[in-house]
Length: 182
Ligand SMILES: CC(C)(COP(=O)(O)OP(=O)(O)OC[C@H]1O[C@@H](n2cnc3c(N)ncnc32)[C@H](O)[C@@H]1OP(=O)(O)O)[C@@H](O)C(=O)NCCC(=O)NCCS
Image (cartoon, rainbow, N blue to C red; front, side, top):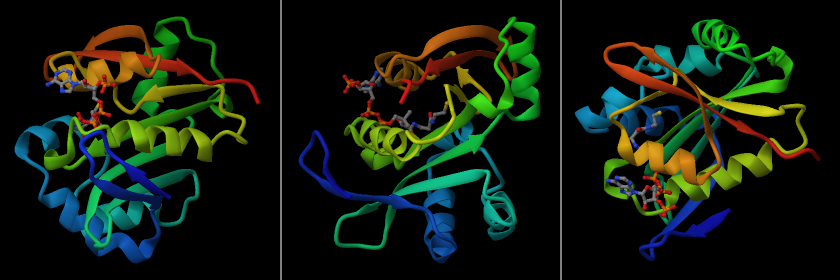
């Protein structure tokens, strides 16, 4: 699917396939130090990529390519259920969400494309892809750092609500989004 960003650039959104692994590695290692400090769902190595998608279909990857090139400019993950540490915190908040009704979301956009609306374009693409699933609630993968103001605005505008706060290398927020019934 081709989308037009707010600043007039074209990007192609598609699902990650193992054939994209080399491009994905190049995308990940070229993220700025600041973005790497915000986004780290798995090691940025060939092995880290292979393991996260390897034998399991419970994690789906999504990528954006700069139109007309094979260069990845955004990458997001959706995992069915909770990461263990996230699940423990959500039970502590009193959330009674069975893992089968939850998906866990981790977004990233290349530094030169952040603020262009590409993260929002990809989020809509993902919502469409999971709309036939049994997921009722989306939560953030490892929460979001309270200092990550762009991501906080991004999540709030998409309807995410704060579930609770926790400390991990500084203050963080857990946020969740009730998903529409289908
Ligand atoms: C968070 C992220 C995925 C959002 O994607 P994006 O393409 O930059 O987001 P968008 O442009 O679609 O939307 C960002 C929103 O924040 C606002 N914004 C832009 N720059 C901002 C800033 N410096 N501070 C606060 N808000 C800002 C924009 O106005 C926009 O709102 P809009 O809906 O009115 O346009 C992306 O910025 C990113 O990859 N950041 C680094 C990694 C990261 O933090 N991942 C999330 C970990 S929890």
